[in-house]
Image 1 (tube, rainbow, N blue to C red):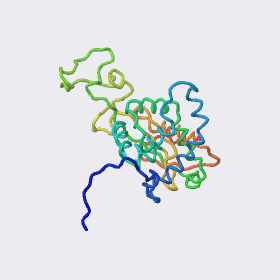
Image 2 (cartoon, one colour):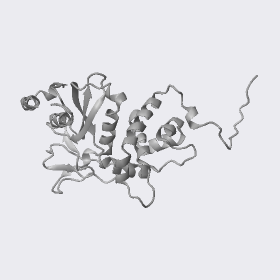
Image 3 (cartoon, rainbow, N blue to C red):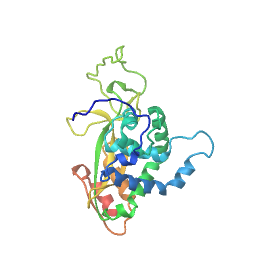
Image 4 (cartoon, rainbow, N blue to C red):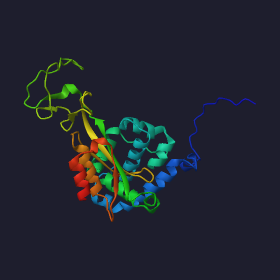
Length: 275
């Protein structure tokens, strides 16, 4: 018998949000670990917020939402809020009830940035790595390190002389700018929209662009990230960040560190041997 396409909206739902998520969904195990790590940070959260005033977005929800943004490569906070609004899986993972209103993207971003500036993200990662279920998966002796370029959200037209000179772009929303025969460097120029961005190219003959550098330290047993850093894009940033991340590891014996040719520098090898 053919079913009828009756588009009737029920006023009430008698199915719990928990029951909508499959029992074997990978996010269930991830949320259990995340919740355990977040509980260990409860005193840290209490110290970050005032005891009086208007309640903000719970820090636990901010960090769970940030995990979702990374897992599913959601490219903006506005799209993340849109997904949480109608995606039951996202609502369940964040901990937002079915009938709760989703936050405004700007409010979410401001609250999340304030939390990350307090180094809570690094403490959250450390709490995760310290869990017994995770710790047994990690190698304490063998690691690999690498870096990658992260494009800055700034156009090349914003890279102007620091002394205020230079020809401005043509009028209009996307005015043209002629850079022919103009010498530009990080010593004499800076972006007007993102001063922290640096002009950098990966190799000789490659394209120069405004960017940052991201660095990650992986353990070699299961390939899990155990540390990360973001730095200015310079020719020595990868090696400097590698030493910083290695120094944060608690070492009881010698360790091995794998890296590509970019790390093959005499001073870097000497620094590792000294450690």
